[in-house]
Image (tube, rainbow, N blue to C red):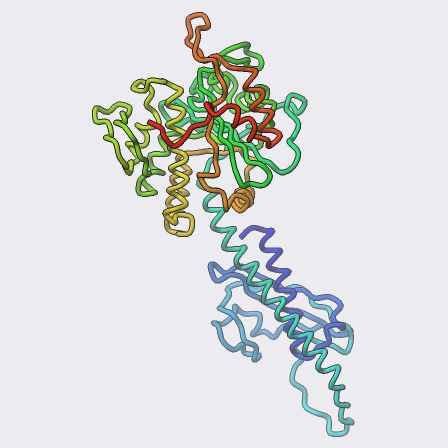
Length: 454
């Protein structure tokens, strides 16, 4: 359990201690200071371990028996009900002004003493109502913290399965675009083309075979995923003009981010590197991904194309589907559409199959995602939770998939390249940054990837 959560739970137990003492007719206003010790006891949660207090000049300490490990659930030797046994004993000081003491020992009545006046009925009712209120609030707080503890554990498991990308934003602040107004968020996605998964950047070891910019407006009711063909000919900071996929090879994650920021004028909030081989395991964890084709669909490195109709692709078939370009009339442009189509189907599969509500399935998915993706160090576990909650109502149909404007293909020396349409592309980036995409999409319907993808 994290230190912050432990502190929160300790505070909750402090409130519970107050409710407990008030329940013993100790006026809450007489408490000058109080604290309780807490300790974690496996999956059984947090237990109160001990209390020390003093009254006036007399210090009150627990009895020797209370200094021993806690007994099993039931009645404490002193008469208090305890939770499940706890092997630890933590103590902190409880200070009570003279005349008031928590859990006072039983005393024999003094026959010569005058009987204490009966408390006023109205005062007694106020005290009882206060006990009920404090007890109710404390119980609610415990429930909230318990749920938070489970959520933290679960999300931490998910987060721990995903490797982090170091120094992804090691870029001079003066070289970066300003943050967009509001609470929109932008992800840069890069699919590596190395033969093996590249955990640590090495110059020349891999290029970004797939490049996508995913943008979500502040409302989170829609999203846009823009693909940039890998052979797009642009300026790479410090390296002149080259294919955009060379940026990662030249300078790793930071140069990749900087190149896209300079190209688009949009600040990247998070980076994710994708290994398409990992999507094979992810697809199999989901039980396959369903796609429908109107015509025969070829697969990379396969002599058996898929006939027209609806198919549930295995992990191996999904990998062949997103990698193929040689069999497609549009080459890399058609491969980009296939990758977008697969991501859309993957979203639908995860939502419709109940995966996100089945802890057993999510545990397997977490491992598969760990094989398929890495994210920047700034995306924490709780950042993932916050992002997921903000997008909980987003569906695949709310996503618009499109390709950056280009002027077809050309040559740069001996290299075959994709010609970047700077004028229309700048209009796209401006519309995306302003969260005003409707007019741009209406004027450029050819850029949108529809449901009919070969």
